[in-house]
Image 1 (spheres, rainbow, N blue to C red):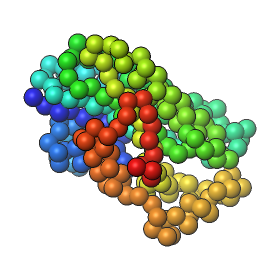
Image 2 (spheres, rainbow, N blue to C red):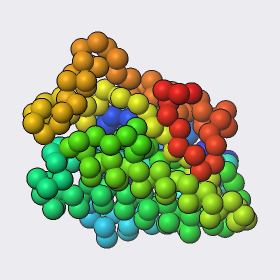
Image 3 (cartoon, rainbow, N blue to C red):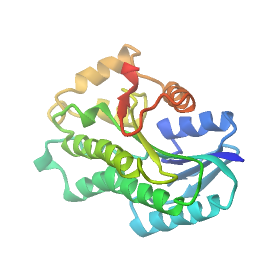
Image 4 (spheres, one colour):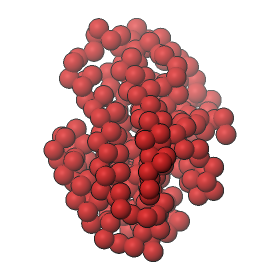
Length: 242
């Protein structure tokens, strides 16, 4: 019997750290990402998550293969995301808006739908963990698209839990706001002109004062909460508050 983890965006940042942590805990791990990285014992599926047909087909094929195994638990982590252009909404290119909403919101909807549907007959622990953001609750000037997409992700978590709570062999859904993490996204934020992002100095100060979480710390916290069953179905929690 196997514990299985599927992570989107598992080639860098929080996603990569989750891959490494769950591998250490003897999970069978699958990563869906554009990039293939040098890491052992994980099945990496190279896929452009912004290509709807390619992403759907790759994930369906993976689920069809996975459900042939004897499974104790299976977890989907919707981790892949993008900040997009940082500017007031009227200055953001329409294609960039589309890509951010698609990766941050549409792909988690599609993948969660397929996960629930394809694995409906499995009688084991089944769960979806959505990587959200404090920006889902706090509006930042210049982040209208990102804030909106992450707020939508929180509602996806809440509605899945409602829909599945009385379903036989139902799926549980949890959300995690990891805090401010030292990733490529933070590098992008710190190099933004103050004219486009008035809060940029706060994020520069967090880096300079060594106040950013490491991806490894976040992955460790998520695993510990997950493995000890301290996550509450339908709720999105902030790691800075638990």
